Amino acid sequence: MNPDKPVSKMNQKRLVFSMLPLMVSALLIAIFVVFNLSVKTPLFYSSNLQNHPSPKQFSLLIGILTRADNYDRRHFLRLIYGIKSPPFAQIDIKFVFCNLTKQEQRVLISLEILRFNDVIILNCFENMNNGKTYTYFSSLPQILSQSYDYVMKADDDVFLRLLPLALSLQPLPRSDLYYGFVIPCQSMNPFVSYMSGMGFVLSWDLVEWIASSDIPRNDTFGPEDKLVGRWLNAGRKARNRFSNKPAMYDYPGTNGRCSHELIPDTIAVHRLKRWDQWLAVIRYFNVTKELKASKLYHGLDF
Image (cartoon, rainbow, N blue to C red; front, top):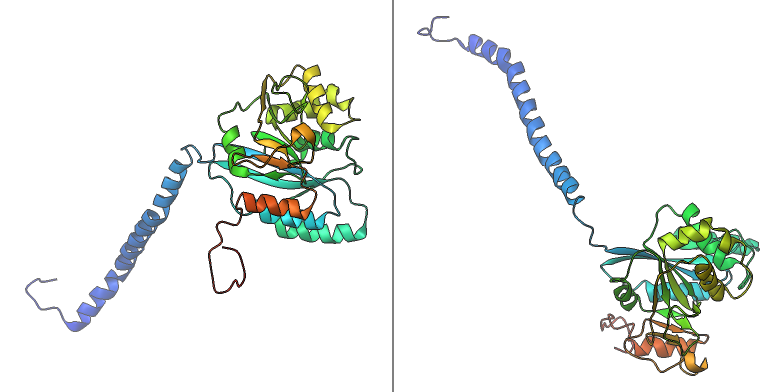
């Protein structure tokens, strides 16, 4: 083609059409590059963030041993414990009972599981001092999809303050640990006797030991909290023992030396058998303090 000769309109159209494949290819390459920059860069940062320590410093499973028919108590405890959790600890709460015996239980508890996913049904007959606590601890390594730093057994008549509980566990060892309220009531020595069944904590390695050792397997009948202490002593386990008195105690006036008045530094209050006792605890610790005044809520205390 002569560069000095004007290009006809027909030739201009032919030139444009001949260059279309090249232009389309260049456009597709540009789109591909921009797309990869916009998509891959966040993924790159995400993978880098995974290398940083998690803000959750430790994990705790709280198993509340209860009975299948205690529907009202479970729903109430869900309200209590669902308000707030410490930002530095992963705390999971499960309600634990033995095999279901009624058709209505199978239906209603199925609905609970679908809604809340916070139930563990053990393969045992419902009991208090005939192996339920052993079945609870010994089953966890097989049935859980994850391990925890700590596992707690708690009664359903105890009020646990999750933030003070987590703060008290935060500096403690993550292994060979046995934590709670030592019995007898007047004792301050965690190495004498055992931790009260109101709520005691074991590190995960001790849970695994209970699941594999013949010592607890052959000694499951009797007061469950006393048995746990006996197992650990027989196996020369739990070198790290901590009794958290006076922060853990029985409700005032319910159990002699194990009881005292409510105090601000409370971690656990036990023997809450009546609704008026729960009401007194909720008011004392101002559990509903996050509630904001609204025209929607006539007659509430703010």
